[in-house]
Image 1 (cartoon, one colour):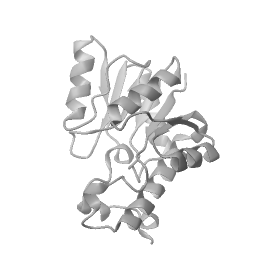
Image 2 (cartoon, rainbow, N blue to C red):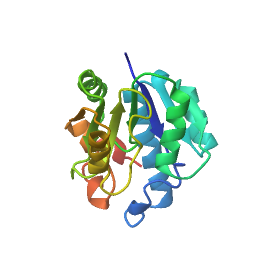
Image 3 (tube, rainbow, N blue to C red):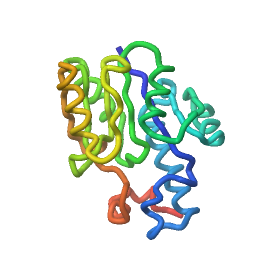
Length: 192
């Protein structure tokens, strides 16, 4: 069964605050928009639920064919839980919005790994964060995004007696969190 995909997104003007020393507010907003558009296109908008506090971002998602869900809070784990409740039954994949190398093949690899695991997680390049998390059905484990989220998700699956699988792929690992990460952006993300 093809999973629904959740993308939780901050308003473009607010995202990537850690890059404020390297990018102006306008440049950060443009980068956030490009990253969001890229991840949404790679995921296939028709199967995506986008959750955000930004009406403009939700309008953009709906125009692309995604379902838009107005976020009622300001915290990532709560937003993902909110979207998971709206997703219904079946597999559910949460994706980060800052994956410039993400391809449909990366999504397919997550789905394939999910055929034999209850929980599939793709860590960031450091191995500590989680950039993608697939559950065989919503609510199997709580979302634990934040510092050390990969281990937190793995531990939650173990405590629940669930089969956990790790998937390592460049398109799922390379996120944009620090000024040093900007140097690894593909050229089309760097244009003004």
